[in-house]
Image (cartoon, rainbow, N blue to C red; front, side, top):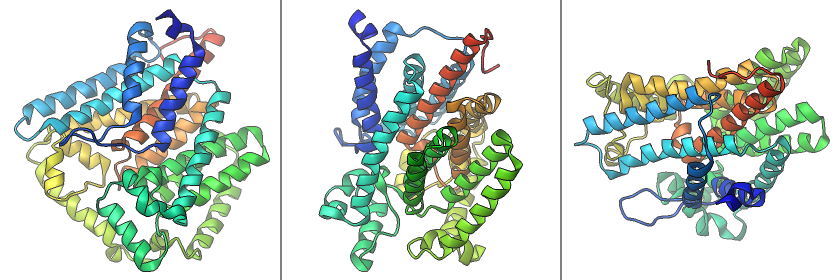
Length: 414
């Protein structure tokens, strides 16, 4: 085992394969009635083995880990209390949180340097852009032959193919996420990443990569993600940058940019932000109907909720489209509080240590996830969940190292 412990090449290869799977590979089906699995799920077994041998408790992250374990325990309680409604597929919600813990601990232990992190993200971004370009122009018939493995043959994929056949164009990029809203959140991560790097290094290549990521973010046509990304920029400039002139300039550039969006023919879905009245927004009105229905049920079980109870949504063809309502429905008031703390603790630490590289990324991406959670379920997507665990762990590790350098080692979650 010492070989694994000391072999940085092995660890680096494991990290590359794991993140390659998260960013670029589809899931696949093995056992009937069970969720799909991914290559990174199998690699997680290796990560578990390494951590079991080589991970020691660390007071710098103890409070946060206790919180996540408490959330895990509470989900288990809601499943047991609602055991009549929760089948074996409900266990997957426990597994997602266990995966979050393992990814967080692994990348905290084997912290990526800024340089290696940038290199890896650049590699994955190039592959993602190639995949999205192939999808946008249906190169080699990729939308009919390959995309179904990413999106599954459900309503999103069927609607996508119907638009492609009837209008011969792609209205919303699904990407490797297989979902336009989740793909927009993924692309927002790259927009934030390249924005932070451009601010730090002032290199032309980061300007080009920022524009590229922004174009493909817009081609996902996600209204909520657009609002979330704009707010993340505004809050970053107000809370972290604090350059008044830059804030004013960026604000007016954003207004100009939004005016240009309205003229962009392919961004019909985003343009509806400016052209549809509230009552004409059928997407939002359908969400209100579902939320109202779920709230009526929440009143009857607002402490313990109903557990994950995935089959309820499957059998009724419902999509919660609001992570806060979903957490409240599934796990009651304690569950939604624990979910919020899962995000607010890294956000708080990012703000406290706002001069750090990873803190800036976590700050902006946390804002995006929190706002997108109002009309989508970002943290319910396993890959977004993993990306958030990744950058949060790197931030905590960076804080620890800085505290050690300045002789100020303390529990960063106090």
